[in-house]
Image (tube, rainbow, N blue to C red; front, side):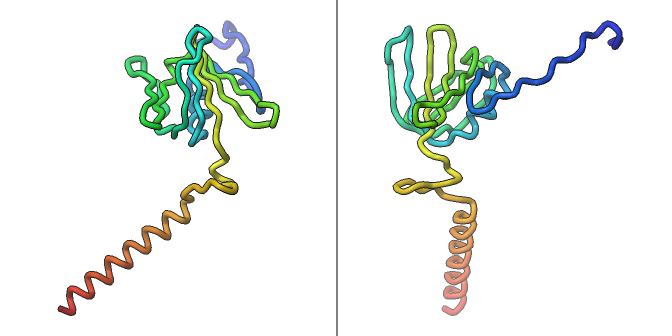
Length: 148
């Protein structure tokens, strides 16, 4: 491509706390960080479903569906035209996914990096400690079996 005929590139968008994302990779990054959410699904402005669940997978594939079932959310960013980030009146993040007359609202339950009262999340350090305890217990069992 000849640089003389190429128009200057526009800077990438910058979204701080509120805004709209249309780039599928940007949408995936936002959705991957949400963890456990309350969800609200509307079709033609009418409530169809709501509940609570964990975002287990976020992907971009023209052949696969977005699936919400059994408290599990598998979100295909190709199922939506854009993602809107906003704040409610308490300053809590709301993520809305839009596609024509379809609207999926996701409200994160808590910041999983800062567990609050009444909500605990298994942290990586806790997982390491749990694995270490299991391995130590297994060694104890092996030693006991060798003694017999």
